Amino acid sequence: MSVAARLLSLFAALAVVAGPVTAAAGEARSGKTVIELFTSQGCSSCPKADKLLGELAADPRYIALSLSVDYWDYLGWRDTLALHAHSMRQKGYANHRGDRNVYTPQMVMNGVTEAIGNKRSAIERAVGETERQDLLVIPVALKRNTDNVEIEVGAGNGPNASIWIISVLSKSPVTIERGENRGKSITYHNVVRGWTRLADWNGVAVKKSHAIAELTQGGADTVVVVVQNGSVEAPGAIRGAAMLPLR
Image 1 (cartoon, helix red, strand yellow):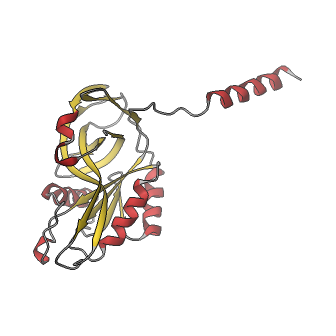
Image 2: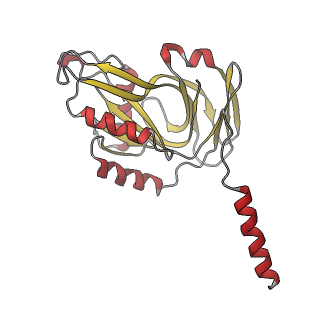
């Protein structure tokens, strides 16, 4: 066997022994596409999208989040999970894209592409388009200790961004009593319950610590950290994200 062949054989053996690099228990690292579903309990087209988001949430390639909006509450049912901030965020995305497309169910991928939230083929195309842009270039690592979540955001190039920490409830069953979905029981997955702006990111590595007790108010059991371009009024591309269960 030649020297080159012996080296190739050695490298192959080392790869098998080493296996893939994974985060240890209680840790999470970035690299997953972020999918945000803007939904409403008062929207008759949304239950199919809510179910689809649950399937995406179970896929390890994605961080799939449910953001309930409040602008359909006047139809006869007040959404029990809605936050007005989600309605504003969705409008901000539309302003940033310049297309003014605001509707439910709508999925937004990494802050840059959108698709009808109950159309799997359209979502898959939008995800593919987003992933080809290679946006997720800022490393994010989360680690839990006894009382806090430790956040590390790596250095990199590109425009300034904001670091957000998001409280998430992994599962929330709701029985809807009035409106277009009257009588339906729907389980919502990865429901966003709150947002906190942690810091600016300007290319320099950032380390932060956040109390778990503050993140789990309202029943939240998961934390997501995103690094995102733009502003609260006009959010842009998500350039790094990680998700970590807290219970």
